[in-house]
Length: 87
Image 1: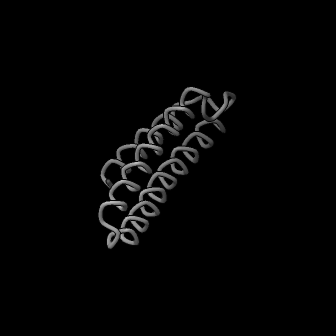
Image 2 (image 1 turned 120 degrees about the vertical axis):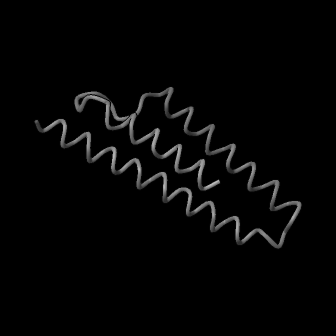
């Protein structure tokens, strides 16, 4: 799961970094795709926690870690975008 979050984060960082600075950061379609991907993660976690209640706290930690990985990648892409826009 963390590997998928890293791949998603890198993809989002590339998308954010390549967008021109005068355009919106995320289009409506991209927001929908991101919401669907995160809902798939949430559904996966929910069904695993239902079948194995002992792993619930472990999975919550995994989810927070994955969200942090994705957020760090998006922030890196945004910094690259802002630096590129200043030139």
